[in-house]
Image (tube, rainbow, N blue to C red; front, side):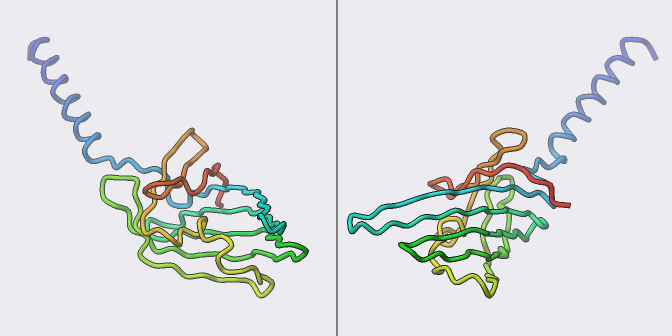
Length: 161
């Protein structure tokens, strides 16, 4: 085989290899076992003079391709009362093919006996009001989890094993 034919042959093999990798190697936003953490601190003062405060840590754990666990731990303060938040949600999800969009098929809540905070305290962070959410990588260790319109949380990667 001549040098020209050999070069042409190697070029075709390289081109086919690159095309095969692009077509058949699925890009994923995270691997199974991926986790990220978000810390939230907020205070509100109402026109009535009443105030509320929330200090919450949220772990977002991708257990498998179709199960996500969201863990909330923190404190909710309303006036002089303090409520412990200690709950987790198991989300059954389905990833929309070819995208970073997840469809929430089902949700289960597990609250500790000490968690007496009102149920609606963390609704926005629970993904309760939406059925779809995106996961977008901002940096190598930072992720944005957002609904179809508004961001839900930004989190940083944490070890899960």
